[in-house]
Image 1 (cartoon, rainbow, N blue to C red):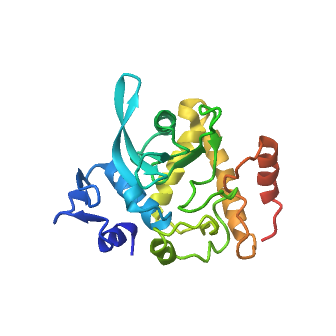
Image 2 (cartoon, rainbow, N blue to C red):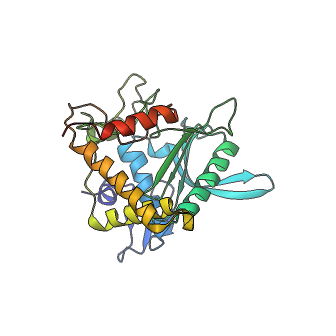
Image 3 (spheres, helix red, strand yellow):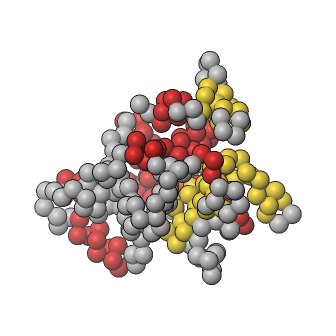
Length: 272
């Protein structure tokens, strides 16, 4: 069962007969589901509730944000309190087929909204492309890139997101404990997932565009660089690991460029 079907079953969303409009039941907001961004918005909302465990009552969508003399709209805000007064996570949702440049603009936009709202974390997503940041209290304009946003009840993020075998905690466990925060519970890690050929093609195209840099690189050189990334990814997945060990080909928190270079170079030396 996919997220949309689960959301319908649990009474989080509903569709009209021809699936043109989606209604977010808790907020009683009806939106046009034919818009590409709305599909990302719906899956992100359901991910926050069903997978990350945030109570529906603490998630608000389409929230007005005051930016100087202008009023903007944040796609999703997750609050740290039941009164929804303390902004915790600000999420910006974009359609899948953005260029790398357009996505970076969206990241900047989301971060500026988050700083204005006093958020602790920022998540910008097009579903196939994600950026996560922590906002430091003393210097909020200084970005700290992180591998994921925290799940509900998690007081400290691990330095990575993906591990062999994922976590022992199931989706059912998370949903049943949504309203029972436990600051001592363990973070849920994620196993790598199979994707469709169509989705993989989109990922490759966006990766190539990012490496091409809008014409700053020769297309064939960009393709060669993409080949190297694919090699590292495949080699990393084939390397034998124990259950619970993190994969190497992913973002690690608080890693300087030298450590990152050493870790990525080491992938090619791993046995398979």
